[in-house]
Image (cartoon, rainbow, N blue to C red; front, top):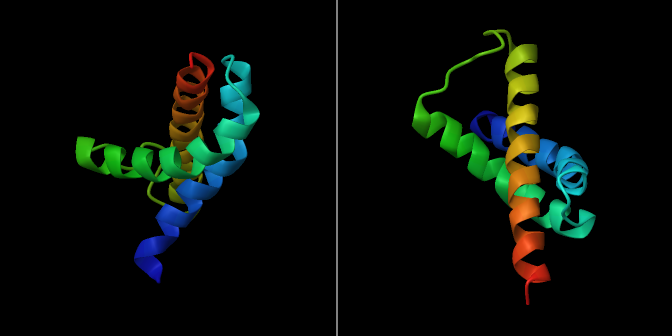
Length: 89
């Protein structure tokens, strides 16, 4: 269960911060929730693949905050893109 905790925290960050960032950037809030979950997990994997290590520190609290913020940013961007694509239809 321990390897999944960063993914859950990233998805949670995307679910909470995704709609807020998506709405601030001009997208819809509903697509921010859906995009938040997927974008949060994708941002976490993307940061690992890019070799971005613990930027905020190595303590467990700072790693959790970093995972939460990664998820929020990824969720906001994906929610914005999804709402732009659906709006153009």
